[in-house]
Length: 462
Image 1 (cartoon, rainbow, N blue to C red):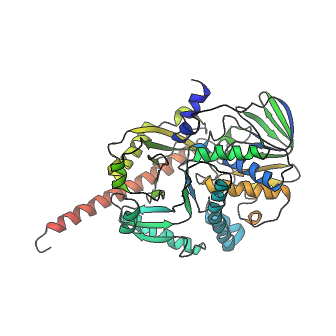
Image 2 (cartoon, one colour; image 1 turned 45 degrees about the vertical axis):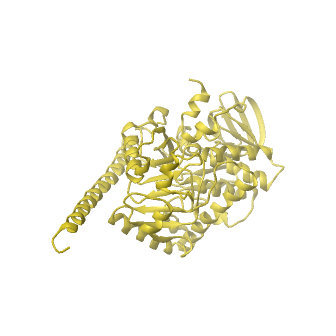
Image 3 (cartoon, one colour; image 1 turned 120 degrees about the vertical axis):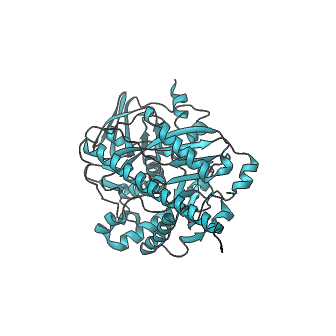
């Protein structure tokens, strides 16, 4: 199989975005630049873009092991959503409650910032800002939805940022079977993530950024990036490799590379969409512990993900692990349960992608001016907006610009390393098992409650 076909198989999004594909040049020989960015995903591209905007004369090169958007940037759920990437309690220890409030507001503002770039750069990625719903299909989920709103209020969300919605209000937008209520926020957009990544790369190139593809990096050091067939010398070296960081020498325990999984239907009929609704394209997620999330795609499919995480002992990242029949079967069951009108639709795509989970599940952005080394990542699966903030923050740090971004709580944050195997493997299995067990217990309780409600309808005197 050639690389073009292999790349297209990685996700629905890459299949469409790479229908016509010409790889960019590989890095060969020695290249001299001001800033070398390792990684052609969202973090690397947003960093290069923000630097090129701030200082048009700076020489920037991005080097990517495969093709732009190959990793999670081209395979995620397409939620451009607010909400901090990480644990509030972790950030609060260093920056207090005020730091959390500022972080949440920066994420909210970040949604609009990406939308402005999409518009100004004319990136064709299906951008639709219709907000997002978290739906509850059981009483415990409903309680978590309400508790979630209260937690957001404590972190600075106002009544205009998120609120509780009834089943009828959700049904008026998108008909989800069994919904009891939920929450809504206007701070979310739907996109085709691969087209966003590749459109952003083209915007970088229009500003003079050079991008090398199919050039795996073998080592990163101060002022030097080495690949198999060439190297770059740069005053500033930015590591933006997210889950693939664990492939670099000495970095195997920096993150857990965990695979999340998705599927997509064929384009649905107009009759099915008439039944489902979803004209505003607001993405939907449920309130289960192993939650599922879904969007109406620009070409009229349902793309749905979640329900199970894959981690291979030793942190290996392998393309063959992206297809998980048992997990994808559960995702298909969730699709049919939540959207009965799509029950007859064929599944056209199944895929997976790796995200980076730090030991404290909280992101970090760092720049050491003495060595010229910078890094950002560790978004724990919530990186679409977080990566843009990280890229803009790195641009400010590199250029010595003080800003609100450089004072956010993830700047300078460094998570401790994960334990050695087999403890990492046992921990991931335990986390997944506990979440699955909690969901199963709630499902049993919910089914019992449904039976009781059914019987009560037919009791004498009712």
